[in-house]
Length: 264
Image (cartoon, rainbow, N blue to C red; front, side, top):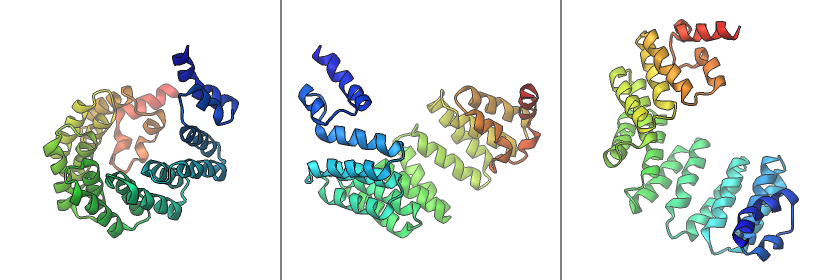
């Protein structure tokens, strides 16, 4: 009975907006977790200020631990309160046993604001301590790609794939880099590897459809794109294929026209 209550208590509390002590009595969920859960609900409902107040209260429950500041930073980031999010991430960074846990989202925040030098410096700080942090290396590669430093970006992605040959994000990034350079055979090879690494997801098949379209192999492109559709490509994405700048000559895809006729 206790196990069942423990599993159900968070849902019951959120549904009833019960006071924080209710779950504490059951002994399943801490007050900090309750505050954060309720904060998430309020932020999703549009009550951003009230939700963030709960995240701040949760962080204040354990001010010497980085986790509360980190989650507060994430909530502030989502709410586009960038200066406050940066301050929360910096607090988490100072408190953390492994500062990389805060440096990765902090670098993402800085990059989104166009502060690429600061983002790179933050990621270098992480990689200096932990050269094997693949998420930080991937983020660094993406920033270099954004700068137009294609050789350095490729080196970062290749370093990840050398350690983890089926790393989905690195395969996708490496394929996009090859596509950007006009290396269609290489791009197709990386997208194929991504397709094999994640056979039930649409990204590899969609990428191969892009490559085939660039080669004007429209029937082959449709084979790949229909496979992507079967593996989760959204209807919205399908209906807007012709406006995807990656898909040059998309208006010539026969599958696009046949499905449009079927819907008509």
